[in-house]
Image 1: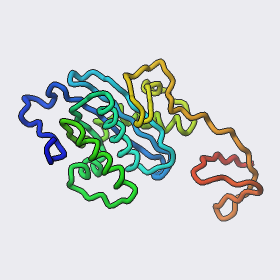
Image 2: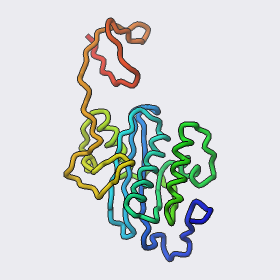
Image 3: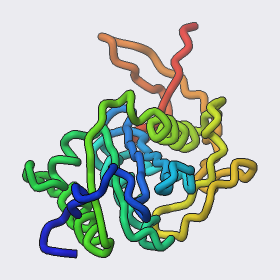
Image 4: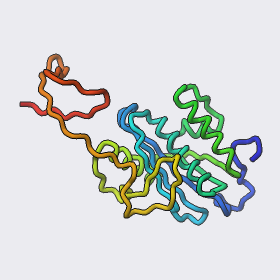
Length: 219
């Protein structure tokens, strides 16, 4: 590639020149930070879906999850010989940071940003485009499926059984009949007694780590 991060495809008659793959990616966090995950769907130049990615990331921020989705599709492209990649995301912050329009001030996001730039330069062509959330529905659902799995919840969505692997491993074509490798079993239920004073729950015995979801029953 040239010194410019983004390949200029303006010479093509349309936006889908032969050899270009298109990836819609999305990331989310329930709590920001909270249980997080990303999802992505990759299509070839003919619009055929060739991969669906979905991974639970643990307790992270929304922006961390967005960058993890970008890294996931970049690694998929490199590992699967896709030399030209167009990424579509509803994260305006990430898109403009990758385009050099916004600075990356966060010390947490900076390493992810640098890795994404490094990986993108290994491709012959790379573009990033911003879309509204409505234009990223499948990737958004895959991200929510990942968060549901990590939180021990079942999902009735058609994408719930999408083939998922960590971005660091080779990702192959989706196999809907296979269970996700990222599925995390639900934690065992635990009953603790306590009382409420001034709107704060005080436990009589035991303690709970940060980030644990609880259900309070009044007796």
